[in-house]
Length: 502
Picture: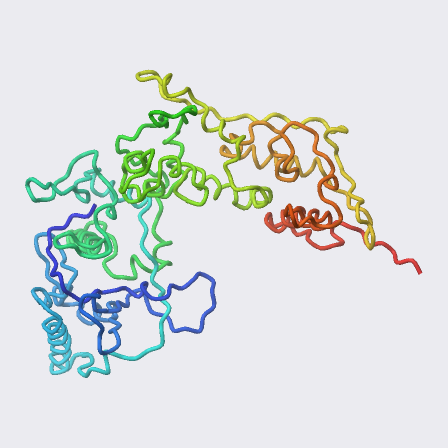
């Protein structure tokens, strides 16, 4: 959480960054005008009604350059808590009219003073600031906070977490630091100011910019203080990554058993330490807080968990935060998508035992050793034979083309290599025959699959959502090639053209 002691007025213009407008999509061509990351669009809050004129687009970078000698205090107050993000002249404005007057007096007053001093000034008439424009596309990129950036800050502060993290003490009515209760800023700071509790945007700017200014004034290594430094994608990508990112330790166990108190299935061994490097931050799994999943997601669901039960939190395939959902996203990545794109959404019944591999709740050790992680070693592929053919000739529906020869063992060998290189895939495909599901769906594992034509006739069976044989072959083979980026997608890549008889 962000250190801040400033109270903001309940009324005020929301300084909505241009990101609140239509965001630009990477690689997407657009004819709309662009809005720079340094541009702040100034809107009324909902409770203040509708503005009579278009919102002002305030270019922070141009103003910062113009008043470089005066510095931030030309517009903002710096108190014991650091930089106050609101305009100094608006503090204490109690209603709409007073707030409008405060902005106009401050901005136009400054412009007139600078013009009188023969300095670069600014607009002094309504239409010069409140300009009617076509909707803009923002170039602003949201700032992220990953393990590397956290590590750099921890190193700069010599691992003194209290420089950034705090909790609110209801009894003493003040902020304080409590070790072991560090959480993400968004767990307390929301979209809007709530009395003394600042919005995430205001809290972040107040704490981060204040700290960067303070460190720069002491000739210490400091971060950016202008919008473009944090909200421009190129600047973000240029942030140096630590070669060895330190583990973010907050008392979490390296491994743990996951099970409900009255669970009927076996417990799940969870390897927390091995999951951490596969995420960008703790919030990847823990949302806004760093609480255990079961604190909010109970067996029957709770208000804190938005009604999502414990089982759903772990198993909901459509949720990227759930175990199954995250695994599904990983499985649908380029190297796995060839098979997983055509399979039913996980988890399959056969996958249950892969995770639920521990003892039952009644037998869970209370003081014994935690679960250990062992990498799965895949079985070697069998030698080619009638049961495991090297090639398969597909000669059904031969008409304009010659039969197609499928390099069966080569394909299976490639899948075997992909699985062996992934700890996740290896754990779910520990038995070699499970990889056969990608092509031979609906066939029990370990049994010889029947020919495709035994289920798919030449004519589609609409009543059972079963495509015809030709469509089944092409959807299976070409669909995999497209997903895996394999160039062979044309007719004669698989079938030699048949000579036309005269």
